[in-house]
Every structure is written in structure tokens, then in C-alpha cells.
Length: 121
Image (cartoon, rainbow, N blue to C red; front, side, top):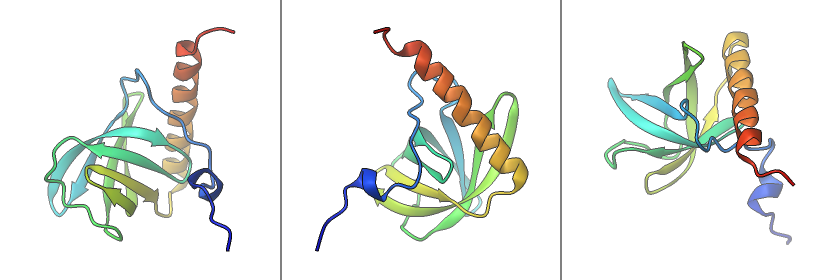
């Protein structure tokens, strides 16, 4: 049996929002709101670090995540795919065309920011 690395299992490339002003999301869980920082983002989901240790996240849980981008907020349905302490992998669930455009636009913006931060060769 051959084991796959995390990179081989991933369906999409990840963008890391280093230095971004738009790297915070709000997790809307059970009528409460919890802040989280985006660690990486792809067209299939995101990995976040919850600001407080009290966010009630368990693998399999579904809820809404508010994603801010260029003055707009999009509520996106997510499902917890993995969790380790305050770090959680969230999978996007059936994105609407508007939400898909919002995520894709944010990914492009983060890629541009990343290119500006990378040292020139």
C-alpha cells in the first residue's frame, strides 16, 4: 500500500495570505461568531487558525463562514474536514456562482500580494 503525501491528496493549489489585510474570517457557529485567520486558501476550501481556543469545531461540523473581500462579505457554507488544536481545514460546500466568483477573486488578489512580497531572482 502506497501512502500519499498531503500535497498529493490536495485537489487545488494553496495560496498563503502573508501580509494581507483580508486574511480574517468570521465563523458563524451555533448562533455565535468566532474570528479565525486564513492560513491558506484554495478554490476547494481554506485552512484557518481560530483566534480563541473556544470555537466549537469538530470534524464533520457544517456552518457558515463570512469571507471579506474588497468591501464585500460573502457567507459561505463550510464543513470541517480536519482539525488539530486551533487549526482547522474547512471544505467549501456547494458554492453559489457569486460565492465562487468571490473566492476566485480573493485567490487572485492574494496571489498578486504574494508576488509583491517574494524577493526577485
